[in-house]
Length: 335
Ligand code: NAD
Ligand code: ISE
Image 1 (spheres, rainbow, N blue to C red):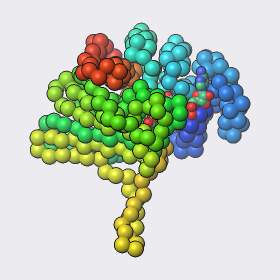
Image 2 (cartoon, protein in one colour):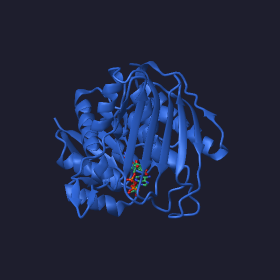
Image 3 (tube, rainbow, N blue to C red):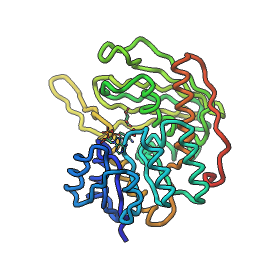
Image 4 (cartoon, protein in one colour):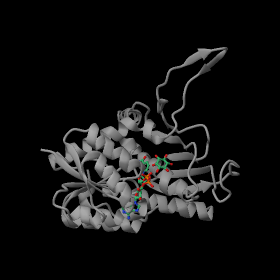
């Protein structure tokens, strides 16, 4: 059986996911697409023989669509995810699940009322080979109890529309999820330090930012977010434990020795750095839709990250340490 997928949002990552659902991943077919930019939706639909449906909620309700992928901009996610739950359809939603913790909680409540999981959030780092290897080392106790984590998240550049809070809401959310997942605990406190800003981009943007997180069980994490670093896309993570350390490998590239120099390339953006993770993420999502049982990042994960993200934005604005407080985890998401 083929899962007939409808995709809402045909921008950068929407097109990328349509390409992989169409060409790379077995058991799926993109039958419908939608975008407020209707011309773009029609163009994309024409390329793959799908139907362009003007409204996202109409796409969700359409009988030809079994499952939905939401890749529109963040503020539109909650409406579409809630509509998918209302229709009883599986929905894969790109990060963030919603732009406020309150909207994430509405989604969690709607899913609980439905009675089983329908929502998966696009925290794709959980599917990256390096992060998975790091988790295996931590879970096996090889480095002893984790004490400290050092993370770096650098983008070559961002567009003018990117503002200071997006360093948290759009960029650091990936680490907010991977920290919880790698360490198996929640973030309890957050703080942001802002050094002088790079002169390379817009005056309104505070870039770079140094974030500090503390987990419920006392692990301290530092995260540098620098989204106009110029030289490329650079993701680093090292966990320091009582007995040793574990760090992500750099993406493989040839080493060229020439004219007294040794050089290697740096990837330029997330499409190439996480290509395998995106492939694996959507392949496993389609498999779990086939099996009728989701196992990837849940609406609860989307909610927990949104609460930490909101707290970190408040920390950025106030310069204070801000506490992170989650509601009680419902049974649906235990285990
Ligand atoms: P984009 O701006 O390239 O594309 C967004 C698309 O959504 C556009 O085509 C726009 O016309 C459409 N859109 C806007 N409002 C809409 C609405 N109400 N209904 C339907 N379509 C609407 O953005 P992008 O870079 O593709 O990002 C999309 C989402 O994916 C964001 O939530 C972003 O955070 C996430 N993202 C995730 C990753 C990752 O690493 N997992 C990487 C990039 C983007
Ligand atoms: C983008 O939306 C992503 O999710 C990328 O992974 C991240 O590196 C970038 O900063 C975000 O803008």
